[in-house]
Length: 106
Image (cartoon, rainbow, N blue to C red; front, side):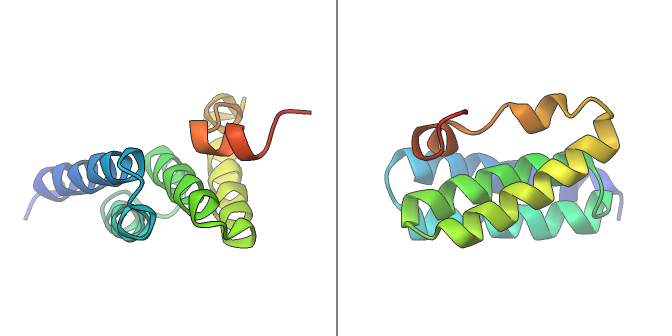
């Protein structure tokens, strides 16, 4: 099986996670983002930019659930991947809106 269909499924899971987050269905959003993270790891490998983006989404869902320790763990893992893969950390500095609301920039 080529990676393309799996990558598309991972993108759909990520988009559904975002939609569920917007609908304030935080547990469902976290579950969908977790599935997207796991599938993107299988498709692209642990240190890929797409995995970082999915981890940022999962972090945002955890913030909305009120689980700040899980949120920070996911955010830090995503940030490490972004810094390693992008060099500049550009995507690491663009936090999901829910993280920005809960963790204002200093």
